[in-house]
Image 1 (cartoon, rainbow, N blue to C red):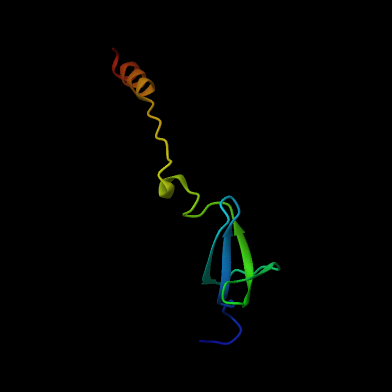
Image 2 (cartoon, helix red, strand yellow; image 1 turned 135 degrees about the horizontal axis):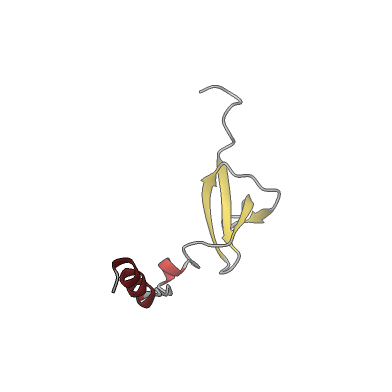
Length: 81
C-alpha cells in the first residue's frame, strides 16, 4: 500500500447519547473529544444518536402502523368500486 493516501484506522469509542451505551471499535473517523475507556486508555469519542441499544427494531419497541383503510380506499378508487 502507498504511504500517506489512506485514512488513519484507529480504535474509537462510539457512544449512544440517548441510552449512554458505548462500544469500542476501529474506525477511520476522528474526533477532538476523547474518553477514558475501561482499559485505562484514552480514545477519540464519536457521539451517535441511534445504536442497537436505542433502535426500536433491536429493542423490540417498534410499532407497526398499518394503514389498511387507506389501502382499501386506494384499491376501490383505482378499480372503480
